[in-house]
Amino acid sequence: MQRPPANTFNLEYLHEITNSLDEISKQKLKGVILTSAIPNIFSAGLDIKEFYKPDLQRLENFWSSVQDVFIKLLDLDFATAAAINGHAPAAGCVLSLSCEYRAMVNGNYKIGLNEAALGIITTPWIQAMMYQVIPMKHTETALTTAKLFDVDEALQIGLIDEIASNKEDAINRCKQYIRKFDKIPLHARALTKQRMRQTPIKILREQRDEDIRMFVDVVMNPSVQDNLKDYVEKLKNKKKK
Ligand SMILES: CCCC/C=C\CC(=O)SCCNC(=O)CCNC(=O)[C@H](O)C(C)(C)COP(=O)(O)OP(=O)(O)OC[C@H]1O[C@@H](n2cnc3c(N)ncnc32)[C@H](O)[C@@H]1OP(=O)(O)O
Image 1: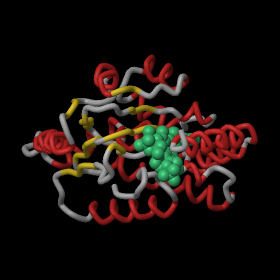
Image 2: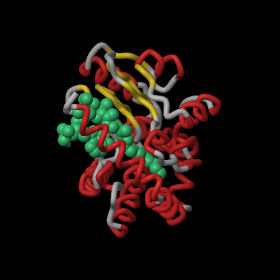
Image 3: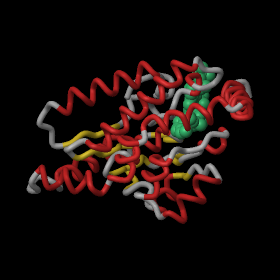
């Protein structure tokens, strides 16, 4: 990913990612590694500008495009791994959860689902992605407290699989993970993966419209817009301090 300053996902970038995923799906790849070209930030998640004072039509398109990206990522036949070389809050964390394996670079970085701090509620498919990786009990506490884990905590809880010393090391660990499947028949691997992930995939396939409605209702709530205003202000003011 290379969308400065923070690899946030806006509508256009989501379209770009969908197109890239369509392109790579046509190739006979062994695996894909997601990482960031921006030092210290894997992805800061969804671009808040998309849902602070939004245009309604664009907001619906935006969430539909989020759904497109994640259904494709969850469903990819080949192996997926994340070399997390920096902060991965919110949708940045969701992106890593869509992968089968996560190596995170050691550093003063945070990863987790902090949506509640913005006043927004994670949708059921995102919750399912989290509790399929870490236990339900920890998921509930992490989501309700908007917990962002440091690298050691993330390893301890199982949110990441390994700690890497730098980006190159993280990528090498991802490659090693992908090589594990060299001798496994592709269709068996792919179907096993899809069945393991059927909860979020099913919600994304069968409850798309309801999911969009839920997102729009949450975001358009005046108190959520007030929270977002404060959050955007805080982000802007960080630099002034
Ligand atoms: C139904 C709902 C389900 C929703 C699912 C997902 C929701 C989301 O993804 S909401 C997005 C939540 N993301 C965050 O809360 C992260 C916010 N960002 C940060 O905490 C920090 O930026 C981060 C720790 C990632 C990096 O810190 P720094 O290295 O110190 O960088 P800056 O904070 O200075 O950021 C650089 C630049 O990027 C802008 N930015 C950061 N995050 C976002 C964002 N999510 N959306 C829009 N813009 C963002 C930040 O304002 C800075 O901009 P400039 O000041 O113009 O340089």
